[in-house]
Image (cartoon, rainbow, N blue to C red):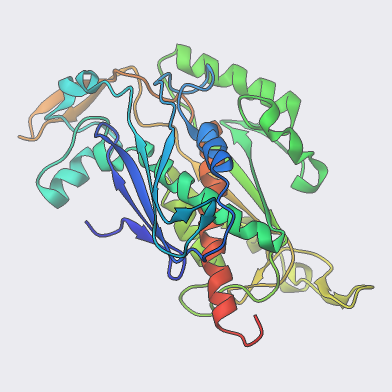
Length: 362
């Protein structure tokens, strides 16, 4: 199956299905001698796992990670790192009623069209549960990025029509984990939770936006043609289940401005570092980081599974009614936050190793 690997020098390959034995990942290219903080990896998985609050799916998975290779006496060895997370609470019987039906806005039909066979139990490989393996790998990437002093902070900035209207500079991002929604604005977080619970009660779902801020990336990371830093970030984020949009820096709002207002003017600060007075470029120019904050927004659609009847067709093309069953998120946003964090970490870990290999002295 193509498309299960990401990265160039820091490269991961994930495997497994939602209702199979488990999910796993192999990391190749992680430098030797890195302190392997398994407790941190487990903590990142806990942020993503199901059943952690009343506004997410109630599937109960501990998501305990087992390290299979690549680590000795608490340090990476430079050889491939293998990790696996075993499934414990899959209920495949919940999907028996759709074994031959195509659920609206799911990957059921497209998987069938591509492969001629599909795992209907929870979506198989197309399930968002696959992201557990990505988070485990991204946590290792975060350990590498610690050496560069890089911080990644994602948060929920919108649920439905409820929007955090403050720029990230005016928010206390340390409050992100203080509520179940993962929104650093307490007042908006409370309104978002109320909305999510109302949507769940109605048997429906709702979408929103995750904002991410990356600080500490030095100037000079990224490739200037096909592998531009913002393009790689876009690819990584859009590969997350339910993500429908990506914009960085001024994004679509920038089209209303003239170049004279949009350009980020340079200056040299007191430390002799080249800086920009504004940051509409979102920390990236010409596909390469410029040392300013990297920030972007990612739009996530409403979860496709709803507890309501919908019309569809089966594998024979006959009209059918699809009824949502099982345990599902009414809103993917709270659990998407750690996924975004760790996908960004994977991109930056790869760019860090590329930068180190392309310039003498690095």
